Image (cartoon, rainbow over all chains, first blue to last red; front, side):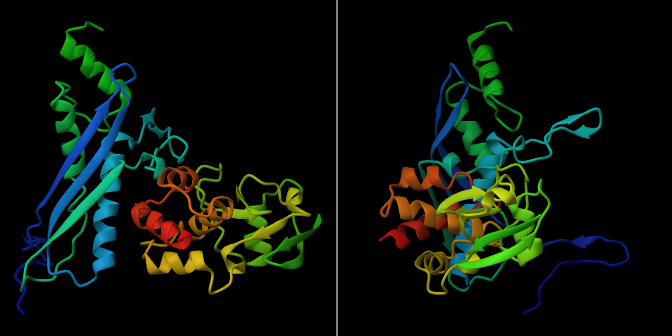
Length: 165
Length: 147
């Protein structure tokens, strides 16, 4: 099989990948508008997986992507003050733990007969923050920065309700 | 100081500073490398050790305070251990870094609650972080080890 693509070693230019990966996610979210706390009740993602050769690995890749996406969406940010990282340990840089999981987390590997084998990568990650953000959008809360912290939620509530800070 | 530690079923003599934590002593003196230093402040669970059956962060327990207690790391588990088997069966890991701590935390949970609810599993294992996000399959492993 001839694989198109590849970068010219001299110029560094070329077709980086000829695979297109499609991923989508949906989230059901509860928001406490008094505290700004977001709870993701259900999270589902589906990705195009081509031909799956390692079922368990593919599922782990998807589940891990979604959980990492949850971290990106709600918790993870590197804080910097005066050129120094101020949250350089796991006490302040919050990685999702078991207790942060949605009540239901489900996903789907969309396969196609005769398709190529290709790396799944973290295709299920990027749509997760967007799905959660859109769920908030359905409540009139428009957050455009990550992570969507409780403070940012409260600011969005004030903005929606026309309250001046 | 010279300490006598009871580790994985055997009495071991080790040399440790008085201010040294159990984590470093297990690794340096006994070569128990499944006990891993990550955060060093007791929030990640990678250095989990069973102390009289309870999951304890090795980075927070003074080595000297571990004398007289029964210590268990995954090196001390039987090859046919049902929790180890369940983790393998469920593919409950990607990189495997958090796995020893997860296995020990799961063993402690199952010893206390032989058929834990989903909520119990989530709460009991929340002190062990997994950057790969293998929680779905880890919970599956714990459920199947319980059954």
